[in-house]
Length: 121
Length: 165
Image (tube, rainbow over the protein chains, first blue to last red):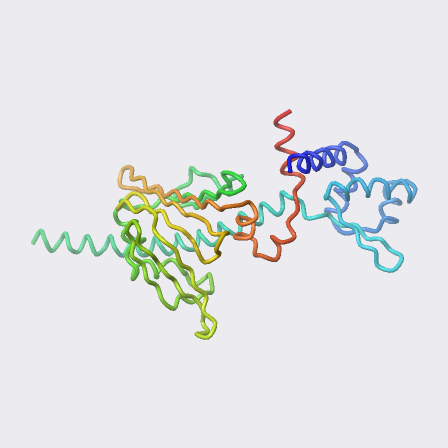
């Protein structure tokens, strides 16, 4: 498992160490693109772009799908994004519960105050 | 990773303490005994545990909140297809601490620990949910289907790796 882990870390480092690949990620963050589009945009050969894409894909940062003759690249579901979505969902549930709990506690406080007034009389 | 600032009052914060543990904190503007009361009396508990925004109906709620006691919550609009959550209270210290098991998921069940700390009439609630495995935790937050396809990640580890270098 540790090996699996560090292999991924190394793949991610390698993927992000290159300026072109960082540019490709930036571009894909704005929308999906085909390998051909990316090659044009970054002024390189198809083969060159395929190589970069392969590195990004290995690191799990990008996924590609071939439809007909066009290979489309998109941002992969990164660990960080999934993590944030997970926490947001968890928080949503507990936030809703605790807000309702505030209401129940306020009721208890009012009851206590009412009892306190009665006792003083 | 923290979802919100811990300094803000009445803000729910959620963070992962480890791959298997989630910690939720929240401050309540009330003494600990009232928070405990709302948590330990079934007729009060059912009022807030299933707020309308969650879109679930609580059909029944039985709780015996004391060390060794059990609870059973049944959800669902369709009586033919109920969803039950149940478990045992491992430890109950009035106004301070409730620990229970979540046994509906069998082996993947978590243990929840709620502690109440009163200060100047306000109560800090700290809740820990400890899962038996990373996979069980992932499943709890994101739904089983997504969790099944979980793979070991990249950026998070990358950042962790970078700070270690």
